[in-house]
Figure (tube, rainbow over the protein chains, first blue to last red):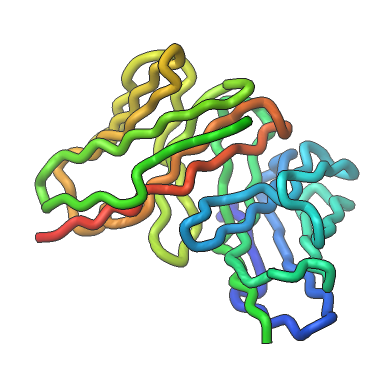
Length: 113
Length: 111
C-alpha cells in the first residue's frame, strides 16, 4: 500500500544534541512538507520541497534543517539551536498540483530529556 | 498578513447536525481544504473547495464564499467517531503548495 512513513514515533532529545526525523513516501509525489503542531497552535510550516534537490524555508525554519536528495525521502534535523523542540512533527506529501490534497504521515512526538 | 480563524471547541449530540466555520484573510487564494484529525493521529483529507458554493460528500459538506473569505464544514447525522479536531487550511500561493492551517476546532460528540 502507498503511503508516508515517519519514524520514530517517539523521540527524546538531550541538551545540545541534534536529532533527525525520518519521512519516506512511496506515492511518487513530487512535493513534501514538514509541519510542527503544538497544543492550541495548529500546524505551522517548517520547510517544504516542491521537487527533489530543492527546498525552501517555511514560517518557523530557525533551528531546523532538511535535505531532499531522493524523491522518496525528506528527513528533518532538529538542531541544538532549536530551543523549544518539544512538539508533534508531521510530514506530508502531495503531487505538487494546486487542487490535490496533502497526505500526512503518522507523526513523530519529540520531547526533551 | 495571513490569518485563519476557527472556533476552538464545539459540542454536539449523536444524530445532530453541526456547522464549523472558518474565516480567512490571506494575501493569495488557490483553494481551501478541510482535514479531520483524531488525537495523536495524522490529519486526513475531507474536502476541497476552490469555487464558490457547496461540495457534498456523504455526511460531510463544505461551503466556500471567496468574496467573504468564509467557509464552513457541515457534518450531518453525527456519530461518536466524529469526535475529532477539524482543520481549515488555505493554499495561499505564498509557499509553493504548502498550506496555511487554522488552529483547528475540537468537536466533541456525546450520546
